[in-house]
Image (cartoon, rainbow, N blue to C red; front, top):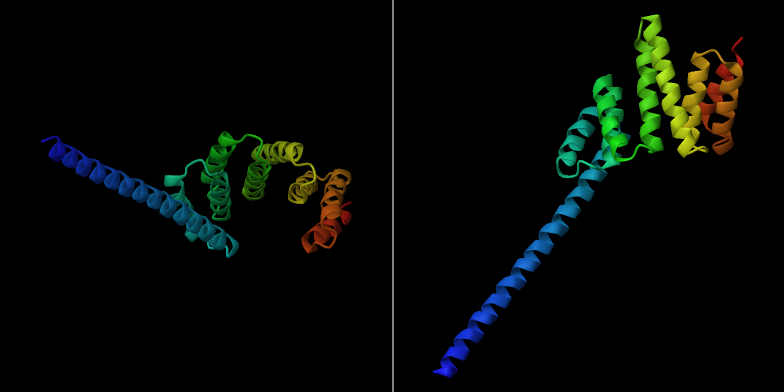
Amino acid sequence: MKKYFFRGFLTVGIVLVLWLTSCIIASAEAVLTENNTSVIQKRKIREYDEKTNFDAVIKAANEYLRFDPQNKEVLIRLARNYKAKKEYLLAKKTLARALGIDPRDAWALRELARVYLEEYKVEKQGGLKKKYLDLAQASIESSLTYAPQNQWSNEVLALIYFYKKDKVRATQAIDSALKVKPQHDSYSALKKLIQSMP
């Protein structure tokens, strides 16, 4: 009797170990598949962003964020594409989410400044124009606090000072950008534009 009981117990034990092993393998495969899918989706978002396919980026980024809502890179790319479509409120809300994750993210702060600059360009009312320009300046100065040698942030700062008609500070900002990328065409063009200021 003991012999049969032991065999039955051993069989149940083996079945249980095999079942647990298959569960662990299936779980690991699911995690690997999920990670692989998120890597593929993120790559797709970058490709669409580089091709300026705004609608495709927005769709892919929103799908991605359902599974990983804390991904700053995807949030910032989504906001950039909202800005490109002139959906400024959505861009600012999305950047607020990114800055909620990391308030010192220089890229998110720079993109927020760019949104304010775009609003400045389309605004007709004088008081609001000044407000947007001041908000852009505050965002970009915060960005430069965390990444002082960032040439893109210095370019945005030069634009802000250009719009404020501050030739000296605009020149200083664009010179900082040109130190990092001396042969950059758009920086050189902006420098010429600044130099032509009265």
